[in-house]
Image (cartoon, rainbow, N blue to C red; front, side, top):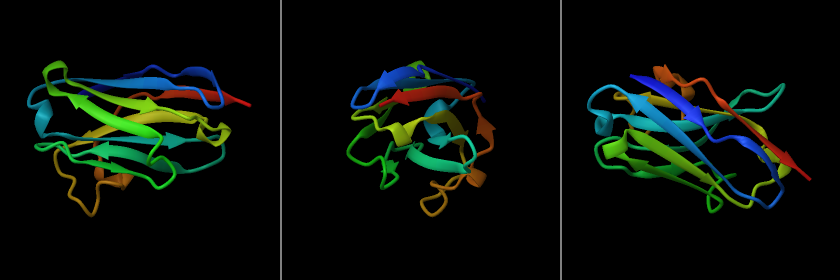
Length: 125
């Protein structure tokens, strides 16, 4: 599967953005999709994920209540709604997919084999 993330941009603190991750390939509904982010000088951090074949959602503590992940399997797309953005949310956001993640690994970037190119989110104070 190939992934393409888009929707990043510049937003003021407190604002919102909606990121999209469009996938090519078959059986998209069976793929778990995760969003990760990486700020300059920092490691890649889990943001949110949606489990394949069911759509259960998972969030990092830092994004729970502010970000919402959703998926439209008919469009082969996963969305990440970012709300109440903080300066510390600024990063390159990546989407990733895998058919092999389980509940204990869904937050681990090493569990995902397919990655999109990333989209930059900048938050101004």
